[in-house]
Image 1 (cartoon, protein in one colour):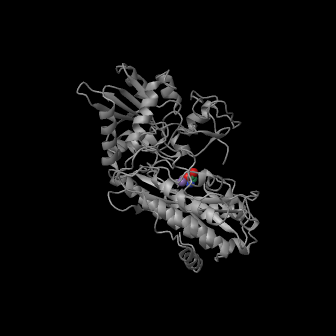
Image 2 (tube, rainbow, N blue to C red):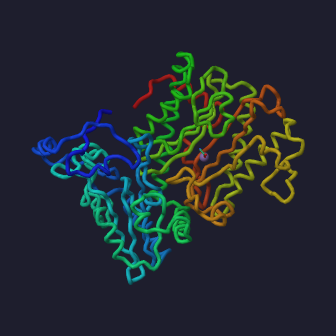
Length: 511
Ligand code: GLY
Ligand code: MN
């Protein structure tokens, strides 16, 4: 990155050029020079809207419009303000890549930083939707050459108000008019999501921690529990891209080993990330790439371990597509392409548990049914191997979630399912009665991801099993009939896994 000109010495504001509290040491731009540089420009080239590179209406427009209508019906009379959020500082004057808040994206399909959706109540009991987007400084405007955040020369010429309106199919207005417009609206019941955008927080003080903001969060997340056809198509696309990313990873294992395996986890993490960036927006969460005993660390995000023959590799990775829906998939595989008998024995137990769990996924079932079924299978195996002192039939007091007196939890560690959608752990603000203690409905998508983890320092398991971690995770669509495995293109049976590895390693990775 080169140094930037600043607007010091000109009439241009610098406040937008860097984040608050950060400092730039770039070379000042004298007034005369700024005036000279400001001349002789054509309009800056437009960037296509990310939701529609062709400029046509975005594919999900009907879905987003329906989402707004549902929220409007759920909150009659309320003024609702939902921000996309602003970029977070990574280091001094550089930011993390921006990702719009999921609630905002679910209502608009928009992904740009700083945008704000306003649902203003109409007398007729519905709402008028207006999306406010920032207009970036172009040639002839203050900041074109000097504003590193919002100058088109710096960051590209984001789609205009008009283009955004055409692509997203809703009224779009300049962000500069947001404050005046909101102040002009009635304020009897105002709802926003605080903490995302200081501009909105200043405009609507007192929202943080308020009952109304909690209600808005909860209402949106409960409306997001059931996915429509567009959302399911996006989750399928995310799973398909994820399948290709896993195949890239498997294909590169021999090259990593041939190079000595040093920091092989990082190489493979990067391999998957390349696929995620090529086919989508990013990874949907920090990839977990754990070789050997690192597979027993649930959130192994450092990914700085070596790769070696004989280990198991646990990879938990998901592509987030451009519409921001994400997959969340885990496969565990033998690095050398061949299972040891012990690895296979433990793997098959986890696979049986996963199949039992997936078998419970159908409309009307308890959300926790998959968890109970999978835990019962694992507790049963743990007892048969002499690790659990009691059979799976023994519950833990009143706790029906706890076969084998709950002692299996030492080795299974986590719940088997969470909902999936725009967020990897979707619908987090939904109430227990609609989520964890609720029933599944057709259109819900959830993971089924049992695991067995024998920590390297766990004296309660045979020494030769210590340091083995296995998880198998798929993304399951609930229907009125059989569950649909959206990530089922990735093999799970142990022999299918090794055949897939051989096949992937027999051909070059294709972009
Ligand atoms: N795959 C990451 C998680 O579910 O926590
Ligand atoms: Mn998961």
